Length: 272
Ligand SMILES: [Zn+2]
Image 1: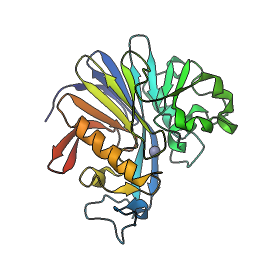
Image 2: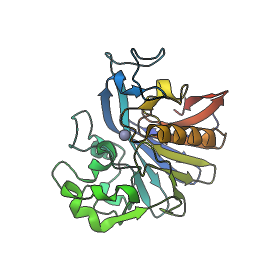
Image 3: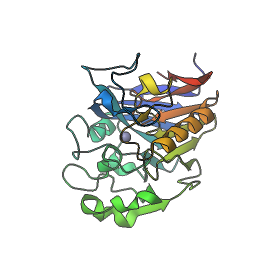
């Protein structure tokens, strides 16, 4: 079913550019990370003896796509999350090449908005050569609970950092929505265009083959498991409507689509 809100206008192996009403949206591939299925948690916190039926595995591992998203407004280009650069595994850090492939100059990015400060979201602020990866960014928006990460490798960016809380307006179109649990300040961004709303929800779902259908299942790295479960259920219920889409940092690339409610569970319908 094509609801027609998000129109694919250009794509390559590592980017997909959409017209979303009067805004542009570009999905950008940073790479992927493989994790063992033992990272999954049932209610009560125990791991599974074996992965639940239907879990998609690649050579016995969960393969999490790592995505970032660019929102293009008439006078602003807002990058949501920045990938891992060279700070974690060599399977990540592709964001700069993905931008190049999409024909987007890093210098043209005016704002960076972070969903949270885990390595695969924040580390891309610094390029592998140690330079500021987005020197044109006037502000780096970070949930206030996680501001302390701006030290060491990231210390040089401290002056650009804006600590934010729920409801902060990154621009006229992009507003922060607190969805904590995965991390203390974990934040989604609601992007409002002339045709609908796109919610860039960060790490609300890590394993799409499983957690839409069974949203009670959590992730070892959720800092507060019950809160992460509650945040997922709240957001899933909010976005399951026809004029709303989601963009997920770990949904299979390009990571954008519609959520449908089916009884107590949910289904994801990716856009092309
Ligand atoms: Zn993540």
